[in-house]
Amino acid sequence: MTIATAKLSDPTVRAAVTAINSGDRAAFVALLTPDATMSDDGNDRDLQDWIDREIFTSRGHMDVQSESDGGRALLANYSNETWGEMRTAWRFTVDGGRISRFETGQA
Image 1 (cartoon, rainbow, N blue to C red):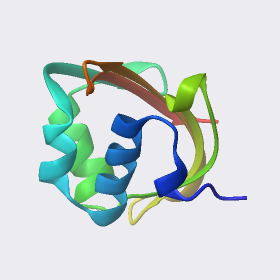
Image 2 (cartoon, rainbow, N blue to C red):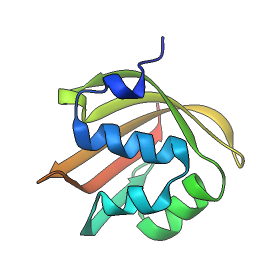
Image 3 (tube, rainbow, N blue to C red):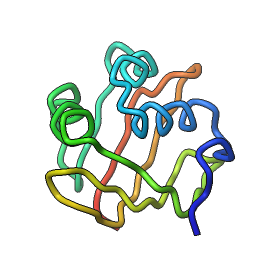
Image 4 (cartoon, rainbow, N blue to C red):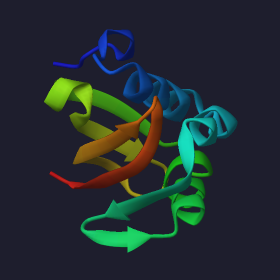
């Protein structure tokens, strides 16, 4: 069962998922701290390169299945034009209403 994006508990994570699903790179980047980092399947990646390749140029879309940790940990069916659909886990570190780190990978 999918959780409607508007129902996600953490407002910053909710805004991030909204930006991803609407293809709004500027809105997503505005949610990041200047020194934000990320990892994919346990490997740190270049954040700007990764979001362009895996989200915004490949039309990434997240259907959230469940949330925990106050809405900062998500299980989602994630799809993009490169890889198709996969079950993924996402964990966001939010500081002062902005994302300082996120980690994702197959679940």
